[in-house]
Length: 318
Image 1: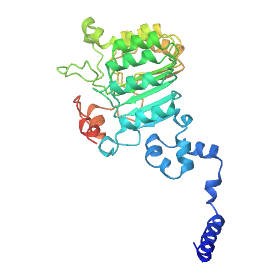
Image 2: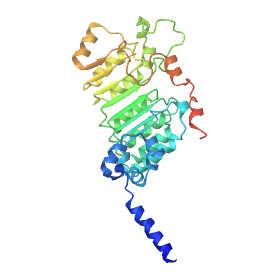
Image 3: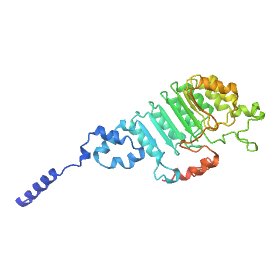
Image 4: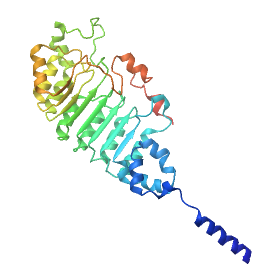
């Protein structure tokens, strides 16, 4: 290389060294981590980590994945990503440090089991809009989550065996939410009476036993609960009384849309004395993230049907 070529090379290097980095790149990584923590998992994986090497390095830190929030910003018909693969990748990045996971619309039994095997420190699990996709696997998964303190299920199945497993395997559980549309699993389609009609037929032991199965399972297996939310549950007064007997530590109880419970003066007085924060069947649902007003509202709002295969078009074949 001649002298002119060498001179030009040195000049280019000199100019490059004189170029100032953008001020935002000079921020400490701790501040960037704090900022990036506010993004959801999809935004981190698809956008943030691709901005620069600093951000990518931060986004790979296990501490960035102590909270994993996937699906809550997307409606089913708008999801352009394979959220299940994203979730697995996020859990793997946490290296067992994840303590809080929120999954809307796409969870299934296999995924929940896989998460449980790799997330022994998990304290909070929230699953929504996964009817027909999550059920039996949940009972197996909670056996691997001894530190679980909060379980929230909205429009998502759990069996009585699942609640029994919670009681045996999750001694720290303090919050349980089991919310569904008022149709319930035990709706008598031949019943033309008003939805909140508490006639004598509600006391039929055969029908009552079925409708109270979940409430009785909660009362028997989850005595340490402090917070219980049962929006849209089909239990009768018998089920509620069992919960009051079996869960003496309740601080809050949400009974909105529990329209088969009949309140009398004695029961109302007991509830007000025993529990600090109570929401009654006809209290407003304003502020709820999902619709519970009626089957039609919940289905139409999210373009879903009551079919167990309602999510096939959204989550397969990416």
